[in-house]
Image (cartoon, rainbow over all chains, first blue to last red; front, side, top):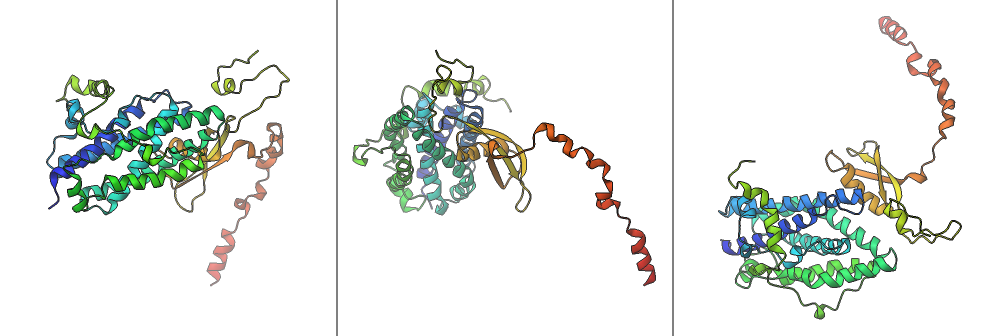
Length: 254
Length: 122
């Protein structure tokens, strides 16, 4: 029997990341740099919300959790387990793109590791999202390459964006001390430390190709706290806005 | 004097006085790419529209969401519009008489009579 509390904790972390990142990315809709990119970025934001919904449904249908909509929109801030990276305001497009690159590579590594998961719903979902994630990382890699080779200012901004996001992105791999050992032992997934290592191996060649400098691994101090419900000042206003319509009538049928 | 335009891509080029040499950074000058959509393996790629992109790789990335987001698709091609050779509009007259040359159509051959006759002789 797999440890249910540990699985729930893991899925809530994953789902909340997807929901908040999806919402942030959707804030670019109508404001993207060119029409084609606006459509692509918005479409991927929708995919993220779709992943979140699929995960909330696993909580609801397989683990006795609450209704997905209510769970997504009605929790107090402290109960969200999203990482600080995804809460950050969009800033300029270089920041949003670099976050998209680092987040989607991490997400891909995570789902790949779950193709062998002992927990069937995660195994099935990881196979289902594979194609979408392939496109998301193709998109992210293409932009990182493009902007890093588009002149001095562009290169400088991409390097700065990487410097600003790397520690936040490393925070995606914050383990829950009370659950981590059980999840690894039950073969649900290989654990955060292993995913972090795989992620660094995955992003490094792309960054090298783009001539961007990844800071020394020992110098990266991952930004933790999100998994424990400790958030930045940016999450609460986002939750308020995100759930505004839902809260008009939480019982309404859509 | 700068050349102000409503198009941000033009402004980024920082055009100066006429006659001044303009240096265009790589990736700064975007192109139009024609997009061809393949609905199933083995089918023809069909032209579906175009995207605006700095290079072929991003053109393909954009094309995927513009033209393969909803309808079935197994592959896409992109090709720079400028690389397509086409006739000039005023050369349309080259095609004008085609409609009068029905004797060139396969439909002009009447063969059923011969086939029926052959079948009856069997």
